[in-house]
Length: 450
Image (tube, rainbow, N blue to C red; front, side, top):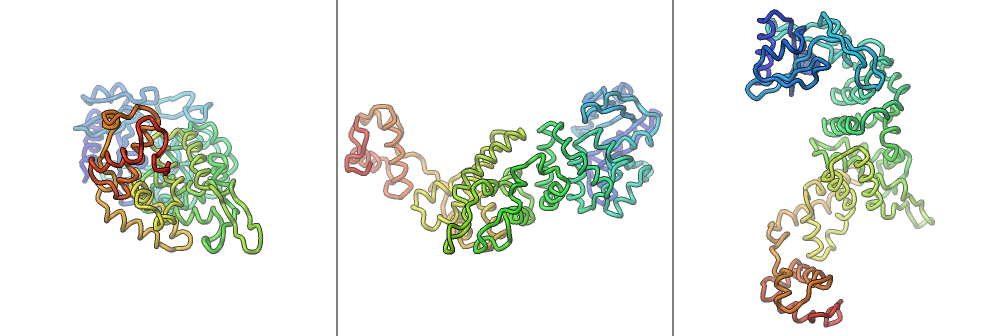
């Protein structure tokens, strides 16, 4: 038994000792039935929030209005919720009124899906199932508890959760439940961008990203949330580079090949070719081919817009945009000047750039020559060679008689370029290089190379 499960069991035991009902509930029970160790534990009880807070020395009333108290036991957090029934969901997210319920049966019937409506008595080692959740787990089915339209009207995010659970567990969505999603898909627009973002991230990183995106598309949700992505469908690609098919098919294949990606790599994999539909150009003649000129730059800009719309952090937006913008540069790597190659290899989180290129190749032509070249170059190059300490600074140039200003930046850039090329190795060589090529006060190279 894990330490967290042991602490959650102690919470149940203490509530029972005080005369209350208490059970594990929700996703943790589903995972236990599936033979998986839950990441967290929720407890449902008939004890009102004030009684829960009196029983445990360390608590936080995270949702007192909804009867939710966070119990902290030796640093472990267990969410304890009072049985309740919800009434009316005007905003499509929060109940208009919450009434504490008298029974566990009433509590589970307000929950989203049958597989998440199970209770577990950790003291007796017994599952309590009032909604048919165990049968749906055995059959591999995602089904709402009660009317699908009512459950989705209560909280629109449940439509995305149905997609995510179906993909994650490789289940089917029960037909009536899926039809309700298709009928109500436009209502997802009332959900906050942050909640949509969090569900998308889970879909892309939980291991079944391709299936999740296919279901999003089939449900109509993808067209509402990410219309830019839907436009990939049916956009042809040059068969000599992309024998697999159109841009959407290529993207799905790439997602299928991801294994435990970071958030930024997963997002970049999903959006790396989002710039192809607006840059599509058919062959100009029999000897020409389909082209997507500047699609990497266009796609980087589009990815930024999409991720900012979904409230991703600046750091995440910048990294994904960099991945999209640079994903075609690998084909030029064998012909890069040493300085250019070093700058390329020195990009932040370069391992993500490398993995995106590998996945891109495997999902298209399958050739990994450039990947292997860059991988070997990166492994052979020590960090101090990729990001060498500066040979000269602005203060050094001032002492040499140069004035602060734009020209100083160009001089330092020229020194860095020569250093990365390997022609400058010492401070003295750098000073001689500057004096030889630049005169104080002049805005160009003395030897005409400016």
